[in-house]
Image (tube, rainbow, N blue to C red; front, side, top):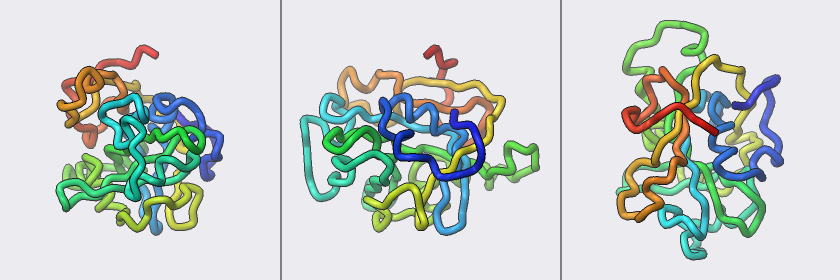
Length: 201
């Protein structure tokens, strides 16, 4: 989990192994247009060798082009013609991997401030998260160091890290079972919690 003073994450943070980035994004703050959420659930996608990844087999289209760039940029796509989903591009240019940001909660949640169930679930799932923050496909390709979109270092949260298989990729063969989803325990916004177990990495 990211630690330290508030500040945009450096590019070097994103250039590491994608699964490590996915885990370390937990507790960081995603900010768009002044709206902010703490990231509590992520999924790693491992590029050309990952049947669940949009760049599987080396696919390179206009839509996925941001994934082929350097780490530290956003890749936003739309599913079912309705929901925008934001990914954090990782690794170096030419290594098309990314982390899907699946869920977030208000910062005050970690301070024990009471919230309604509606507020705590408003960013549960990648489509809801983007809608809550106003993230759209127009943000695809933007730097995550601002000013329009950025990820900030979070505070240490005394919560267990969980991991398990990714969600909604049943057609990806054995890749569907890879334990590349990460989440913070005891956060109501985390999805499909029954498939998560304590992280052993």
